[in-house]
Amino acid sequence: MEGEPLLKVEKLRKHFGGVTAVHDVSFELRQGEFLGIIGPNGSGKTTLVNLITGFVKPDSGRVTYLGKNITGKMPYTIAGQGISRTFQMVRLFYNLPAYKNLIIPLSSPRVKKLRGGEYGERDDVAVDLLDDMGFERDSFVPYKMAGSLPHGYLKRLDLARAMALRPNLLILDELFSGMAMSEVASTLPLIEKFNAEGLTVIMIEHRLRELFRVVDRIFVLNFGEKIAEGVPKEVMESDAVKNAYLGSEIEET
Amino acid sequence: MTGIDATYRKKRLDRGIKVRSDSVFAISSYREILYLVLPRVVPVITLLVLPLILKGYWGKVLVFACMYGLLALSWDFLASCGLFSLGQSLFFGFGAYVAGTLSYYLHLTPAITLPIATLGGGLLSAALLSPVVRLRGVYFAMVTLMLPMLLMKMIEATGLVGGSHGLSALVPFHNEWISTYMAVVTFLVCLFGFRRLINEDYGLVLKAIRDDDRAVMSAAINIYWRKIQALFIAGAVGSFAGAFMTHHYQFVGMSAFALDYSILPVAAAALGGPGTFAGAALGSMILVPLSESLRALGGLRIALYCGVLIGSVILLPEGIFHYMERKYHQFETFVKVG
Ligand SMILES: Nc1ncnc2c1ncn2[C@@H]1O[C@H](COP(=O)(O)OP(=O)(O)OP(=O)(O)O)[C@@H](O)[C@H]1O
Ligand SMILES: [Mg+2]
Image (cartoon, rainbow over the protein chains, first blue to last red):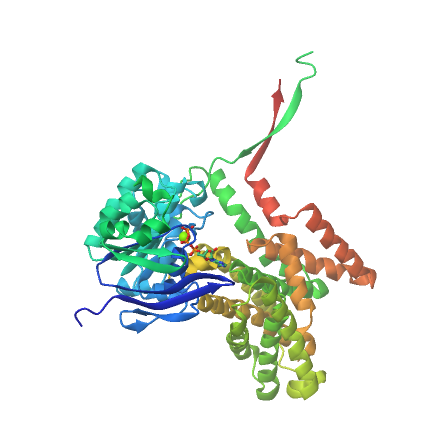
């Protein structure tokens, strides 16, 4: 079994009308790896995540996870097998207190199974999780309505929601967009810690400096196609990437 | 000028005590206990005392209101997870026909038919509607609106289970006190049970499905299975009402699938205020007696009845219960301005 990848994506393709959002993208991911995905706006990164997590059905191609074909399965089935994601546009329940948002993943059959057949005190588990994400347990913050929290907190709440499922594979879709520098600085080590503890992570990010510090490997999407792959430094030096990013944020890094 | 012409402004304050957390109650005086308990105790006592006062016709109206109340509660429960039903008569009819056939062909008493019809009706409702739980909003509503009509026509065309004549001379309740109190108590249990359930984690997930089903899916929860469970619960409640009325009338016919059983519960929930169960319950307690008392007016009854509904929706779009709840939690005082 040595060398069997955790996730194997083969020639995934998705059209939206005339737009080819994802064009024959293939890649493999080993258990415990930290993969970065970058690409200009509209290059198909979010669509790729949606294809892997079942929110969008592919036109063709195949996704294999832990040796099982999960192509086109329902999102809850895929999440139940341990692939958890955050959303670029956070999807939360704004009229619930922050910690109550976590009750939903904590009520899932997956969590019940992992906790040995019982749910335990879900409220306590939720507050613990939020505490990990920097919502001070003894403050009012975990109990505030999600709708009243600042954007950075919402992003971290979304991360807590994804982590509540105790995933094997965590996919972060621009987690840091809209976060303050200080929040990024405190959240990034957290994700590194999860990764060090064995969690496999795919991170989509426009903040390249932070991304390059943590990932093992990156690949670059452009117009839905994978144009380069490898360790960050090499990839960024390749001509294809320079052309794709011409005039965009890469210059600043 | 000041002092003489001082104007007064109405000032509203929310009450001081709020029982916020689930488990910690901070109550210091009997007034505060009353404040919390009265809104629950008064309706319970009223409903338990009413059967002693109301005799004959109005006693029957009370039973009727409780059964419509169950249909309205069932409607509100489905709405809480985003399923908008226009076919409460489907649940009612299933319960009515299960109880009716068991009673007609096997001469079973209500003690046996009611539980079977409740569970069986719930199962039938969930099974029949499970293929359409993926439909949203108006599409789901349209399917539920059509199904009872379809079943009605099928019974008429095939002549099965009594056809257009129905099944009569069914086993009656042998004691009117027992049946009346069964109606009232079931209604109350369902009302408080639903209010409880919706605030548990189970209800939280249902409401979350209504608010953002994709977010719930990403939390590894099979939203369609949850909706089917909700359909079973709502179907069982509606079926109980149908089975009860079957024994009450000692008759079941195609009218069990009639549009009235679909529309009046929605109207009751709209009048009382959806989303709280108490609103749906209150709405049926108002609408059913009202529509009965207007029966004497003949054709004009419907017009008046519609007028009341339209008026209430325009004047109090939030529903009576939400309005009462808000007022109950507010002090109003007049303060001097300027
Ligand atoms: N549901 C959809 N319907 C139609 N077109 C879509 C849909 N989702 C994405 N697209 C199109 O597919 C292309 C890729 O979009 P996608 O959101 O995957 O890009 P992205 O790399 O995540 O961009 P960004 O960096 O802005 O998040 C875009 O042209 C977008 O307009
Ligand atoms: Mg994106």
